[in-house]
Image (cartoon, rainbow, N blue to C red; front, side, top):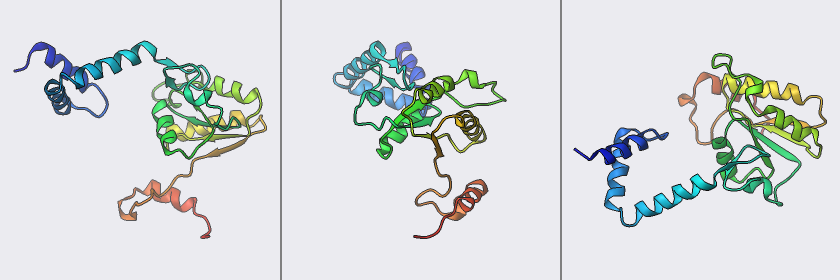
Length: 198
Protein backbone atom coordinates (compact mmCIF):
# COMPACT_ATOMS: atom_id res chain seq x y z
CA UNK A 1 0.00 0.00 0.00
CA UNK A 2 1.37 3.40 -0.98
CA UNK A 3 1.41 6.45 1.25
CA UNK A 4 -1.49 8.87 1.30
CA UNK A 5 0.51 11.43 -0.71
CA UNK A 6 1.35 8.94 -3.45
CA UNK A 7 -2.26 7.74 -3.59
CA UNK A 8 -3.42 11.35 -3.84
CA UNK A 9 -0.99 11.97 -6.71
CA UNK A 10 -2.25 8.86 -8.52
CA UNK A 11 -5.84 9.90 -7.91
CA UNK A 12 -5.15 13.39 -9.24
CA UNK A 13 -3.41 12.08 -12.35
CA UNK A 14 -6.26 9.64 -12.96
CA UNK A 15 -8.59 12.62 -13.46
CA UNK A 16 -6.62 13.69 -16.54
CA UNK A 17 -8.16 12.77 -19.91
CA UNK A 18 -6.77 9.52 -21.23
CA UNK A 19 -5.42 8.36 -17.88
CA UNK A 20 -7.30 5.84 -15.83
CA UNK A 21 -6.33 4.62 -12.38
CA UNK A 22 -3.89 2.00 -13.66
CA UNK A 23 -2.15 4.37 -16.08
CA UNK A 24 -1.95 7.00 -13.36
CA UNK A 25 -0.31 4.52 -10.97
CA UNK A 26 2.22 3.59 -13.66
CA UNK A 27 2.98 7.28 -14.20
CA UNK A 28 3.43 7.79 -10.46
CA UNK A 29 5.75 4.79 -10.23
CA UNK A 30 7.82 6.18 -13.11
CA UNK A 31 7.97 9.58 -11.41
CA UNK A 32 9.03 7.96 -8.14
CA UNK A 33 11.78 6.01 -9.88
CA UNK A 34 12.98 9.13 -11.73
CA UNK A 35 12.27 11.55 -8.89
CA UNK A 36 15.73 13.14 -9.01
CA UNK A 37 15.39 14.19 -12.65
CA UNK A 38 11.81 13.91 -13.89
CA UNK A 39 9.91 15.14 -10.86
CA UNK A 40 11.69 18.51 -10.50
CA UNK A 41 11.37 19.15 -14.24
CA UNK A 42 7.66 18.31 -14.15
CA UNK A 43 7.06 20.52 -11.12
CA UNK A 44 8.94 23.41 -12.73
CA UNK A 45 6.97 23.06 -15.96
CA UNK A 46 3.63 22.91 -14.12
CA UNK A 47 4.47 25.94 -11.97
CA UNK A 48 5.59 27.90 -15.02
CA UNK A 49 2.37 27.18 -16.85
CA UNK A 50 0.21 27.85 -13.81
CA UNK A 51 1.77 31.26 -13.27
CA UNK A 52 1.75 32.39 -16.90
CA UNK A 53 -1.27 30.70 -18.52
CA UNK A 54 -3.72 33.15 -20.11
CA UNK A 55 -6.55 33.07 -22.62
CA UNK A 56 -5.94 35.05 -25.78
CA UNK A 57 -8.31 38.03 -25.94
CA UNK A 58 -8.38 37.83 -29.73
CA UNK A 59 -9.03 34.17 -30.49
CA UNK A 60 -9.57 32.32 -27.21
CA UNK A 61 -6.46 30.14 -27.51
CA UNK A 62 -4.60 29.25 -24.32
CA UNK A 63 -0.99 30.39 -24.21
CA UNK A 64 1.54 32.04 -21.96
CA UNK A 65 1.17 35.37 -23.76
CA UNK A 66 -1.72 37.60 -24.81
CA UNK A 67 -2.26 37.85 -27.73
CA UNK A 68 -1.23 34.24 -28.24
CA UNK A 69 1.72 33.21 -30.38
CA UNK A 70 -0.54 32.47 -33.35
CA UNK A 71 -2.33 35.83 -33.28
CA UNK A 72 0.96 37.66 -32.74
CA UNK A 73 2.74 35.88 -35.60
CA UNK A 74 3.08 38.34 -38.51
CA UNK A 75 3.56 35.44 -40.94
CA UNK A 76 -0.01 34.23 -40.38
CA UNK A 77 -2.63 35.12 -42.98
CA UNK A 78 -4.75 37.83 -41.38
CA UNK A 79 -7.50 37.43 -43.98
CA UNK A 80 -8.68 33.97 -42.94
CA UNK A 81 -10.09 32.68 -39.67
CA UNK A 82 -10.63 29.03 -38.82
CA UNK A 83 -13.40 28.59 -36.24
CA UNK A 84 -13.05 25.62 -33.88
CA UNK A 85 -15.02 24.31 -30.93
CA UNK A 86 -12.20 24.24 -28.41
CA UNK A 87 -8.48 24.72 -27.90
CA UNK A 88 -7.72 21.03 -28.48
CA UNK A 89 -9.16 21.37 -32.00
CA UNK A 90 -7.03 24.46 -32.64
CA UNK A 91 -3.88 22.68 -31.51
CA UNK A 92 -4.69 19.61 -33.64
CA UNK A 93 -5.25 21.70 -36.77
CA UNK A 94 -2.19 23.83 -36.16
CA UNK A 95 0.02 20.77 -35.67
CA UNK A 96 -0.88 19.75 -39.23
CA UNK A 97 0.68 23.03 -40.45
CA UNK A 98 -1.76 23.24 -43.35
CA UNK A 99 -3.80 26.25 -42.27
CA UNK A 100 -1.77 29.45 -42.29
CA UNK A 101 -4.47 31.83 -41.11
CA UNK A 102 -5.67 32.62 -37.63
CA UNK A 103 -8.11 30.82 -35.39
CA UNK A 104 -11.15 31.49 -33.29
CA UNK A 105 -12.13 29.24 -30.37
CA UNK A 106 -15.84 29.10 -29.59
CA UNK A 107 -15.44 27.40 -26.24
CA UNK A 108 -17.94 24.67 -27.03
CA UNK A 109 -20.84 23.91 -29.34
CA UNK A 110 -24.54 24.64 -29.36
CA UNK A 111 -26.50 21.97 -27.55
CA UNK A 112 -30.16 22.13 -26.61
CA UNK A 113 -29.75 19.05 -24.40
CA UNK A 114 -26.89 20.60 -22.44
CA UNK A 115 -28.44 24.07 -22.42
CA UNK A 116 -25.60 25.67 -24.42
CA UNK A 117 -26.97 28.71 -26.24
CA UNK A 118 -25.25 31.05 -28.73
CA UNK A 119 -24.61 33.63 -26.01
CA UNK A 120 -22.73 30.96 -24.02
CA UNK A 121 -20.15 30.66 -26.80
CA UNK A 122 -17.54 33.07 -28.12
CA UNK A 123 -19.63 33.89 -31.21
CA UNK A 124 -20.07 37.63 -30.59
CA UNK A 125 -16.29 38.08 -30.56
CA UNK A 126 -16.04 36.21 -33.88
CA UNK A 127 -18.68 38.44 -35.44
CA UNK A 128 -16.81 41.47 -34.12
CA UNK A 129 -13.56 40.29 -35.70
CA UNK A 130 -15.29 39.82 -39.06
CA UNK A 131 -17.14 43.13 -38.77
CA UNK A 132 -13.84 44.98 -38.28
CA UNK A 133 -13.01 44.04 -41.86
CA UNK A 134 -10.01 42.55 -43.55
CA UNK A 135 -11.36 38.99 -43.35
CA UNK A 136 -11.91 37.21 -46.67
CA UNK A 137 -12.69 33.69 -45.47
CA UNK A 138 -14.12 32.02 -42.40
CA UNK A 139 -13.48 28.27 -42.22
CA UNK A 140 -15.97 26.44 -40.02
CA UNK A 141 -14.03 23.53 -38.54
CA UNK A 142 -16.57 22.07 -36.17
CA UNK A 143 -16.74 18.37 -35.39
CA UNK A 144 -18.98 16.25 -37.60
CA UNK A 145 -21.56 15.77 -34.86
CA UNK A 146 -25.14 16.97 -34.75
CA UNK A 147 -24.17 19.73 -32.32
CA UNK A 148 -21.09 20.67 -34.35
CA UNK A 149 -23.07 20.93 -37.56
CA UNK A 150 -25.83 22.90 -35.81
CA UNK A 151 -23.18 25.31 -34.56
CA UNK A 152 -21.69 25.63 -38.06
CA UNK A 153 -25.10 26.32 -39.55
CA UNK A 154 -25.89 28.97 -36.93
CA UNK A 155 -22.57 30.75 -37.45
CA UNK A 156 -22.91 30.58 -41.24
CA UNK A 157 -26.32 32.25 -40.97
CA UNK A 158 -24.90 34.99 -38.73
CA UNK A 159 -22.03 35.60 -41.17
CA UNK A 160 -24.25 35.92 -44.25
CA UNK A 161 -24.48 39.69 -43.82
CA UNK A 162 -20.71 40.08 -44.18
CA UNK A 163 -18.75 39.98 -47.45
CA UNK A 164 -16.77 36.86 -46.51
CA UNK A 165 -16.46 33.43 -48.06
CA UNK A 166 -17.75 30.80 -45.63
CA UNK A 167 -16.25 27.34 -45.99
CA UNK A 168 -16.19 24.20 -43.90
CA UNK A 169 -13.94 21.21 -43.57
CA UNK A 170 -14.68 18.28 -45.84
CA UNK A 171 -16.21 15.23 -44.20
CA UNK A 172 -15.99 11.66 -45.32
CA UNK A 173 -13.48 8.89 -45.64
CA UNK A 174 -10.35 9.11 -43.53
CA UNK A 175 -7.04 8.52 -45.26
CA UNK A 176 -6.25 4.84 -44.93
CA UNK A 177 -9.81 4.02 -43.89
CA UNK A 178 -11.40 0.81 -45.06
CA UNK A 179 -15.01 0.95 -46.17
CA UNK A 180 -16.18 -2.05 -44.20
CA UNK A 181 -15.02 -0.45 -40.94
CA UNK A 182 -16.79 2.88 -41.46
CA UNK A 183 -20.19 3.77 -40.09
CA UNK A 184 -23.12 4.56 -42.36
CA UNK A 185 -23.07 8.28 -41.57
CA UNK A 186 -19.44 8.63 -42.65
CA UNK A 187 -20.09 6.64 -45.82
CA UNK A 188 -23.17 8.71 -46.63
CA UNK A 189 -21.25 11.95 -46.18
CA UNK A 190 -18.40 10.66 -48.34
CA UNK A 191 -20.84 9.76 -51.10
CA UNK A 192 -22.59 13.14 -50.92
CA UNK A 193 -19.25 14.98 -51.05
CA UNK A 194 -17.84 12.96 -53.94
CA UNK A 195 -16.00 14.86 -56.68
CA UNK A 196 -14.64 14.17 -60.15
CA UNK A 197 -11.37 12.25 -60.45
CA UNK A 198 -8.56 14.49 -61.57
